Length: 495
Image 1: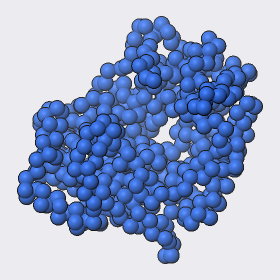
Image 2: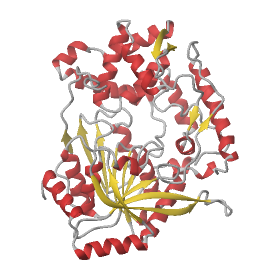
Image 3: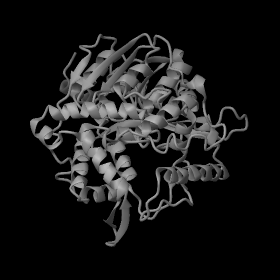
Image 4: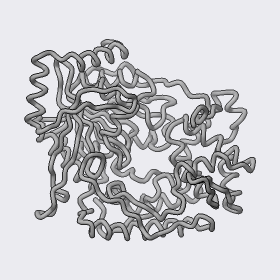
């Protein structure tokens, strides 16, 4: 097999210099699919020839009178001589778009994968270039200068979800059509659109959740499946005890760096100390606004847990979490204010997007798992905030749950590659293995020191994907990634 850099060069040349026969075939297929030829430009500034297309599907297949919506995609034509079925990329979230992901840091990997077949950056229903759904600005405020309890905060979100469900229906949206199971049928429609007997899937995070549902509902239509940072069908809500075990792995990684170990000898203890202080006495901070003014904000324990739930996705962001808690422990708030500026819309009521709200509500959680979640959340470091506002909004729309049968893991012998980062704070190694436990043909590769977004951490990840797509055995069951300096400021050098 060629090296990573050689493969990228070969792919780049094949994109730029197509043979006359290949060019004619590409143009013919675009015409057959009703596609538009475009120049696709990544955020890096790199551009390639591609095609934009749509597939028209029912918004709700259970309703014979359903309106029709479009699901959109960008197709990067295959460059390999022996191309396989189309490879459909499934973005995370829910709410991310395939076309948006293709413009980001994974752009080179999208181009690399073309050696195995057409690569389809798929915009799941309600995302990207697909039929857009209006955002709902609720009437529910969240107090910014008064302390509110977790229960009051959750109740405000629940009222917002109830209100937004009514709003979307009034806007002509059949919100009951926005479930993972409907998205699986969109994949079946996409396969038929291309006239392919099968497609391959390549998904991360929620995209893996969708891929697992496809393995359950349309297995005969799938050739091969790549999963990363997998979220099982019963794992929309992650368990707080699993998050606590992540912090144990993070501490072990910190302890491997003497300077980091000296600074952060007990991360869990530090977080619990700061949480207890902010629970007893929240901190009033002044947050600068774009217009030059400042707005007061009462920083509470739950705000810190919400920040943490995002920062633990990858180790470089976990380094920021360590700095945040150390600073707050010393009575300072500079980093906390920066995070509020970045992630909190001051003065705005609760605003929701239809697709992610509906998808998570539909995938749901059963009574037994919910009871265990609530028990663990009482003492967990992040409490109940890793997937907020789930499960707090569970049942906000009557009957809107796909049920226990949906949440059972898939079974079958479709070839699956699972890539798992040991320092992923959003989805966890044991849970990822459980998510594919019913599948008999799984290659599970552990990427040590990688986090949730592991595709671009090392060329070895891409090489493992290429071997899998070619039907070759894995070079090993582990890939080692260098741990970032946990004492470094990940914001250094940024404006």
